[in-house]
Amino acid sequence: MSSAVSAPAATNRLPRWDLSDLYPSPDSPAIEADFVRAEARAKEFAASYAGKLAGLSGAALAKAIAEYERIEETLGRVISYAQLLFAGDSSDAATGRFYQSVTERVTAISTHLLFFSLELNRLDDAVLDAKLADPTLARWHPWLRDLRVFRPHQLSDDLERLLHEKEVTGHSAWSRLFDETMAGMRITIGDEVLTVTDALNRLSDKDRNVREAAGKAIGAAFTRDVKLFSLITNTLAKDKEIIDTWRHYPRPASSRNRANMVEDEVVDALATAVRADYPRLAHRYYLMKAKWLNLPKLQYWDRNAPLPDDDDRAIDWNEARERVLTAYGAFSPELALVGKRFFDKPWIDAVLKPGKAGGAFAHPTVPSAHPYLLLNYHGRTRDVMTLAHELGHGVHQVLAGDAQGYLMASTPLTLAETASVFGEMLTFRALLDSASPKHRRIMLAAKVEDMLNTVVRQVAFYQFETLLHHERRSGELLPERIGEIWMQVQTESLGPAFEFTPEYNVFWAYVPHFIHTPFYVYAYAFGDCLVNALYSVFQGGHPGFQAKYLDMLKAGGSKRHRELLAPFGLDASDPAFWKKGLDVIAGFIDDLADAG
Image 1 (tube, rainbow, N blue to C red):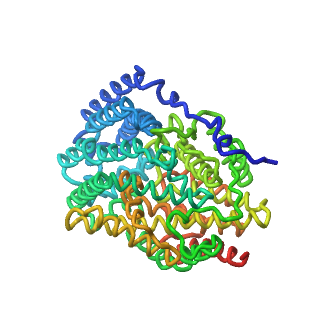
Image 2 (tube, one colour):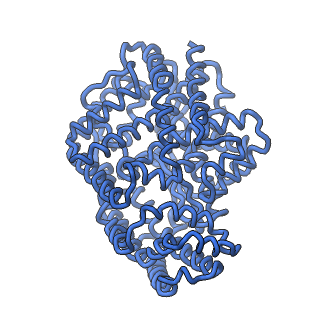
Image 3 (tube, helix red, strand yellow):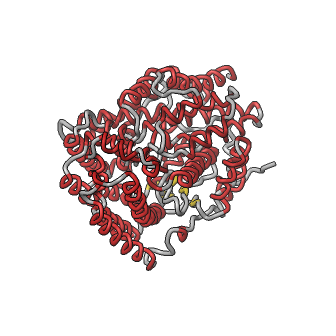
């Protein structure tokens, strides 16, 4: 039986990752050796194949793709190392310089390879189909299929090279500015000076005064820098508009949807279904929560408040580890064995420290190495669920990397959330089954809030981005106008239980996805609803579910969502699919209403 521990004890002896499986240090000779080797191979590759792809046999083209993959994986290893170092401490000037220099050098070397994808896309369908008759090339069919999705939006070789080379002074540079600004920000709450991550964590504190003080302080801090965040946002939105216009994408989200291998219409169906369900999901739940907290109205700092009877017990890292691995193992011993490797080896960084990236992520690095997980572990139940989530990503990345290799391991964002959200659901269900009636209610409420954050909140974020990018096409948006759009979507999504104080209109500024990966956010809602539907199939006793599920993860990016879901009898293009997923959330809210 586990015992309660204090919050400091819960976060003692947290794991730190060891990046030496990639490289020993930033000044390691191995990095320079890989750069020299990759540059020589890239130049030789261009000399051997540029302008000659149409005349290659299927077997020769397969050989060329395999060599292209080897070079790309070498570059991927170096850039992954630099990205992880930067995420570990983006406030360190030397680390920032190393990250930028690596990015610039990788970009320069990969310029020699740029011709390959462009020339492949210029091949006629009939010519490529004839080559694909060779079994050695047929293996690469999924990669070629996904590459050719971008044919209608491909520019001339010179323009593609220009955009490629300018990336280091364009989007990447603005993203770095955002990251370094966020890492350097300090927020004063009372006598404490906190990082943004630590301050945001206070918004889920049991003490309402602590939550309010944190919210006010966060609002004041971002208000001071709102002109900078507005400049970054406006610049990147305009940059995206210019590129989208040249590439003839019909609307701001279309390029992301195409990269996600999902049709605009499917994303529209998801967003429409979620927005239509705001009243029976978020609006209904938060009215219930206001009553539980004995408040006439909720403020934004009450959104993630624990329930009054939640003891909010801090959970030690070792206990979190056992909870997650036990839940994974009950579903699939193979899944748990892969997950256990992350704990047995230094593949996780969960420590709390200044300069570290906020939130959590799983970085796949390259198949010849292994993924790494970054978390900021505070010892809360939500942190356990985050661990389950990121471990799902990590397991997915291991299985797909081993089975598919560098070019085909990566899944579209819409499917990349499948294993992570499924891992969360496994952990939640396992804990729920063993909970007392009192704790069951608390867990259900916490799960509903996580699902609302994943589905309702992310679709509201998607709507915010859509409105902002459309309006940006008519001119730069003032910070006040961005705040108005933010408040519009927050009011619509969260409903009548809330009133908002003025400083909340700058809270859009801390969301990194708006900067790093525009229109990423709907993928969370896509993944959550997909997993809800998938888990319903599992609960229904679908034959061979575990084996099919592992096959789905091992498929990586080699299959589209229709192919992956077909073995389970699911189809994301069917509007009823989204209702099935949303009904799960509504069912949990019904359970809470019945419990009183």
